[in-house]
Every structure is written in C-alpha cells, then in structure tokens.
Image (cartoon, protein in one colour):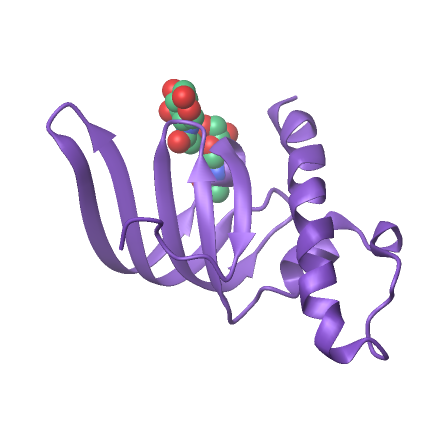
Length: 115
Ligand SMILES: *[C@@H]1O[C@H](CO)[C@@H](O)[C@H](O)[C@H]1NC(C)=O
Ligand SMILES: *[C@@H]1O[C@H](CO)[C@@H](O)[C@H](O)[C@H]1NC(C)=O
C-alpha cells in the first residue's frame, strides 16, 4: 500500500527530470515523458548523484549504483543528514543498501541544501 502511494510522487518528480536530461540530447530520448515508466527514469540515474528525502525527515545524498522493483537502492559515497533534538546530525558512509519503503522524493543530481 505504501509503495502505491509513493509511486505517483516519484513519477511526478522524474517527469520533470527527464525534461532536464532530454534537453541536451533530444534525438535519443522521447520528447513525451508520459511514455516512460518511473523505474525506467530511475534507471537513467545510475552512476549519478541522487538526493533522497525520506518520510522520517532524513535526507540522503549518494551515487546510485543500483535499485530493485521496490526502489531499494544501493548507494556509494553517502552523506546522511538526520534531524535530532540537538540539531542536524550528518553521517558519511562508503556504501549503503537503502530500504525504499520510506522514500518520499528523489532528486537526481541534488546535493544537500546546506552543504
Ligand atoms: C519507516 O518510517 C516509519 C515511521 O516514519 C518507521 O516506523 C519505520 O521504521 C521506517 N521503516 C524503515 C524501513 O526505515
Ligand atoms: C524494507 O522494509 C520493509 C518494512 O520495514 C520490509 O518489509 C522489507 O523487507 C525491507 N526491505 C529490505 C530490502 O530490507
């Protein structure tokens, strides 16, 4: 159920991204984003930096190595930023497997807003 709610949000985000990706090379990418599936759009982000905003106010930036049908993701060179009572806690990690169940938004090419 959670996946079903999240999927349209991801689609909206990525339909904007595909415009950004498509503009420099319009011949190889469809000009109509609605013909692409959300997971095909995530696939285009492999090897790139991606900014992930989680439901529990945690933000993660990393290089996308891979993902599955649930949008669980394998990330490298990760910076995790988490709200705590003492302020934001930033953690650096070499590699993580991120459970996709609490993702609310994916922003390709994004870095942490405050770094
Ligand atoms: C997802 O978020 C809920 C509440 O925000 C939390 O209880 C749960 O542990 C989280 N699940 C994962 C896999 O992070
Ligand atoms: C992600 O979290 C959900 C709910 O907590 C769990 O059912 C699922 O097995 C987890 N997936 C992975 C890849 O750990």
